[in-house]
Image (cartoon, rainbow, N blue to C red; front, side):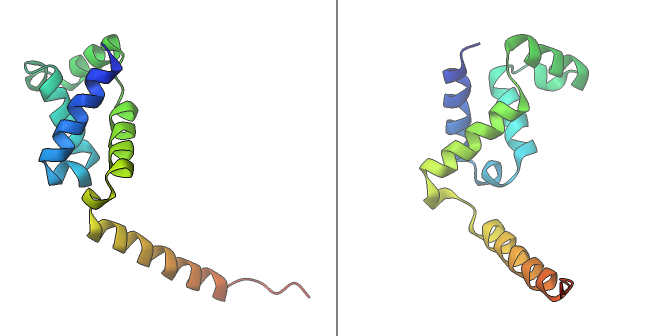
Length: 103
């Protein structure tokens, strides 16, 4: 399976579906469904074996999502990014309060 085909399918899904931009599992499901329509209805183990045989991994799908959002920052989910930044700030504040003194 050509990697450019996977990239094109992932980009197409990300352009059309806002939920796919936020949820990796949903994006993986939609990508598998697009690549192998009948495979989405089979057992998970069979689906994983078929993906492995085709040379596709979950990491490659999520990597294409990150690259797509890097190229199109206006489509990046705002709320999730804002929440993550707030959590990082709160963690830094909390961590800085509990640093031991080294005298």
